[in-house]
Image (cartoon, rainbow over all chains, first blue to last red; front, side, top):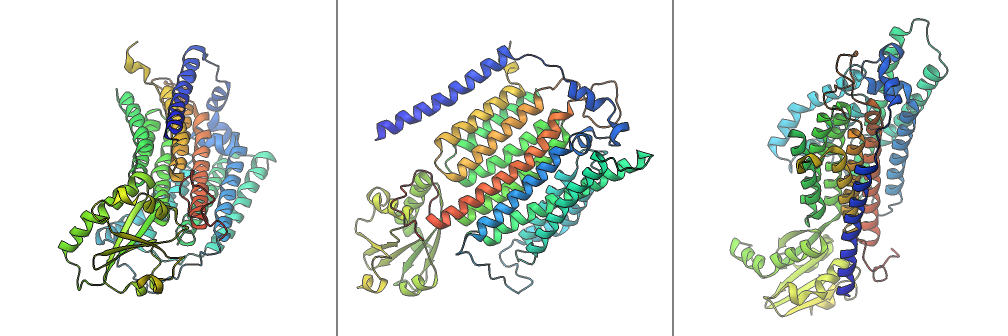
Length: 232
Length: 187
Length: 119
């Protein structure tokens, strides 16, 4: 028994090493430099065409907006999966949350005070990254993730459950619907005013805010489900 | 030079976090790996991706792994000794050397889970009724009892390797809680 | 060719992928499997980011300058991929915790017959 498991171990190591060597050999010897027509097209005139100064934002909000739509759908599906798995968990009744508002016994004083100082700044940088996503690095996904991190730091200080997850879930679905509707109306059906310099920027900011709020609510639903409904 | 340093650090951190035996340590190394790969994205002029990785990989996913580990793989051990009035350091040190430390080492090596210990001198019945510990070590006079469930795989492993795990004490009796009721086991 | 020249972004991406694959094959803890998957994902991201990188280019923000832009297409693809990656991790960890609570299993190699899998 020990002999065979040792043999399997050696086979696994050999498999990984040989696979890495084969892929490296093929990559180093038989890779050819391809042209980059997509890059040339996307970086040539993106400011005039889409109104974004950040060409990554131009790509995922205008040129390849289908990616963003299906990514948002993917995140919503994963949120639904997390919720359904913890519903199937019959034994995990909802935690009994203590009514005491200042239930901070177990927390370190340093963490509580420092998080209290940092918290508004984390919210501020999250909102800044969302709103300025089209002119600087950032955008909806990053800003939403930073906002969700701010919620996690809030959980570190104040581990009570006073969020209405059901309402947050409905908000997430409405946001997904508007994320689908906005590009369909603006980009695909071309419902836009004659002078598009201002309206392009408004579209960018609106889409970034919608995506940011959607990612924020999705990730916080996942985290709070995780903390309060799973396990014992 | 900077690029080479970052890439080598990436390889080292990935290897450490895959090959490490302690789960908590390897989660922390995975967080460091995410931070380093965010630096690498920044070096390769992709600031958007670096921001996303720094927010998601370092902040969110590390916290999620830690929460999952805290909820799942803590093995709850309770040490009961009714004869002791108050636990002082000498007694705890004695238990540490003979039972607790070998058990912890065994668990980290084979099961890759974290044991968590509690000491009490309350009677065994109240402990068993009030809290649902995974494993209860009961010391009564010169005898040592181990209580656990038959459905618990970790407890089965401990029982199977008991001679190698705890070498100092030879007279240990194992009681399966779901086969024998606690009242019968006390006699 | 010096040995340090061999360490480029693409090669390290491939190596990271295979380190993750090795962890996926050998480690028996379920959490370790999920972590290996995220290391594999990181390797793929690094490969994509560095596949069309030229030294001296600038980030693709603002108007065109003298220096060339870096390729924005892989960046835009990888941002969505990272967000999907955290979704996959969350699903994996949720299923793992559910599984542990229902069957008491934290490893792949457990003998399922001995566990009381009915409750």
